[in-house]
Every structure is written in structure tokens, then in C-alpha cells.
Length: 317
Ligand code: 13P
Ligand code: SF4
Image 1 (cartoon, protein in one colour):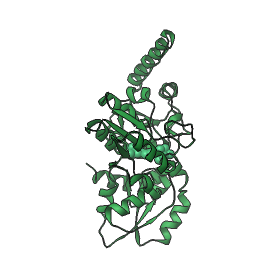
Image 2 (cartoon, rainbow, N blue to C red):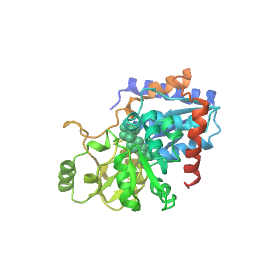
Image 3 (tube, rainbow, N blue to C red):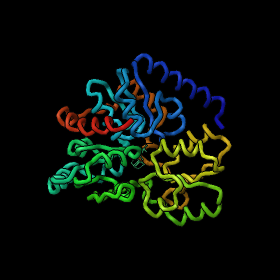
Image 4 (cartoon, rainbow, N blue to C red):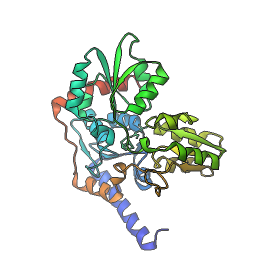
């Protein structure tokens, strides 16, 4: 419970953000893995695809991206003439880190007869060397848009790649990187939670291993998990994704029980993305005030990365 003093300073901070947002003609985009206070103050809160779509249609002069860098990079690639700022420039992603641009370029060159599909959780360099980009919410559609006669390579998430192979029946050459949040869920923890809550559904993100996905009632993007979790008649749900999504589900279905999967360490009651959680309301205020840290993208690289992003957006409703 916040003290009266804390409440006053939080409300001053929120007032300052509201004023700066107006003065800067800024839009605040936030991912569902942000802390609840950031989700609540955002103009748009969404999954990776919804945020890319919002970045594309915004008329604001400044985009404040409360998420991780690959998402802010995408917003900048779509808006080379706008100012894109982030609360914390250290907010990376293990998938992007484990797929260096040069290594991906030579992998791609070695398999030049393959269509290269990259998951949006990757660097600008990797996108620039790809034919198509996808997110967790449109990945199946993107893969199915490729003629069956074509060979496909997919990077960087091996768990999502394997899931897509299973869903589409397509054989794909996979890069080997994982998400540090989803790849560490243990099947024994899930089985224990299922035994403790037999009435609960299991909702999982496709970045999880197969040992988790095989128990899932729903596999989908963060927005799919939120929609299903809030709408389904089941009284409880075990959430196999970053626990930030629970904020949205609890708002929409306050009487339901949402049980987060435990994090990597035995005492981590719920799983959080160490990169996403670098952002704070104070840092968000600071970046809006200082217009720093700012996302800069080399214009030639940005143009090359734009083409596969545009192809993805054209295939997504
Ligand atoms: P979504 O596109 O489903 O929001 O996922 C983003 C992400 O980083 C998952 O870890
Ligand atoms: Fe990257 Fe995983 Fe964090 Fe998503 S949850 S941003 S995939 S590290």
C-alpha cells in the first residue's frame, strides 16, 4: 500500500508525463511485459505486432517506446524522420543477442536457396538480411504465405521455429537461440501447478519448450493469451509467459485466478523479463523530457530492414 506521500509524488510524476507528452506531441507505446504503472499510462499497450502497427500509423512527432530495443528499432525503421526514445537503452533481448548480424548473414549466404524468415526479436542487421519478418501472432500466417516448393530458414528462436514446423508441417532450417524467460520453465513446476489447480487452463507463449507447450490449452502471442485468459469460462489459468500480462487479464476478469509460472531461480515466484523490467516510470519521464536515449538507425540498413517488415504488415490484419 502506497503512503500518502508516495501517492502525491506518483501523481506529480504522472502529471509531468502528461504535460511532457502534450508539449512534445508524443505517443507512448508499451508492451504487455511492462510494469502495470507503465501499461496504464501508455497510449497503446500491445503485443509486438500491435505496437509495430501503432508505430506505423502514429502522427505524433515523438515515439516513446516502453519495451525492448528490437521493438523500438522497428518503430524507428518505420518512422525514420521521427524521434524514437526509450526509457532504458540497455533493454535488449537474449534472442537478438544470440543472433549476431554477421553470423546470420553468412548462414543466409550458405543457404541462399532458402527464404529467410526472422522473428521480430532480432537486430536490424538480421532483419536487413531477411525476406520476411514475423511476430508470435502472425508467424503461422507468414510461414503459410511461402509457397510449399520453397525451402525456409528461420531465426533466431528455435522453440518458436519447432512449434511452427509442427503447426505448418513445413521443414525449416532453424537458428539456435532461446528466450531466457520462456526457455527455463520446468515441466515439473507446471505439473505441480496443474495438480494444485486442476480447474486451471494452461496458456503458453510459443517461445516455451515443447515440454511446456504439450500441456497447453492455448498457445499464442501475449495478446492471444490475454484475450483467452480474460474471456474463457475456466475459473483459473496457469500463465506460461512473462507475468506482466496478468495485469491486463486481472483488469478484464477480476474474479479469475491467474497463476504465473515460477521464474528460473527456485525462489522466483513469477517470471519476469530482466530486459523489459529495466524500464521505470521515472526513466520514462526522463526520456520524454530529455529526448534521450534516442534510437538511431543507419539509413541504408534501415531501408533494407523496412522491406521484410512491410511485407509482414501487408500480410497481417
Ligand atoms: P509478443 O509478440 O507475443 O508480445 O511477444 C514478445 C516477446 O518478447 C515474447 O517474449
Ligand atoms: Fe526477449 Fe524473452 Fe524478454 Fe521477450 S521475454 S523480450 S523474448 S528476453
